[in-house]
Length: 69
Image (tube, rainbow, N blue to C red; front, side, top):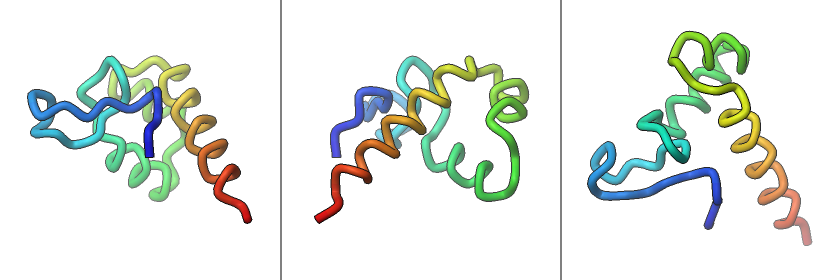
């Protein structure tokens, strides 16, 4: 999986996937969404640009859409 809006770098968060340009782990974003938090609440609470979050989510959706057989 190669997503443009995700960075994996051993020098950033010990190589955990993070949203590009941040130190915010992708796993934390997904967990917070699953817990019922809105994208705007996450962005505001974590000091993120909401566009960073929505760009990642759209990219993830397109990735999985492309996996259809």
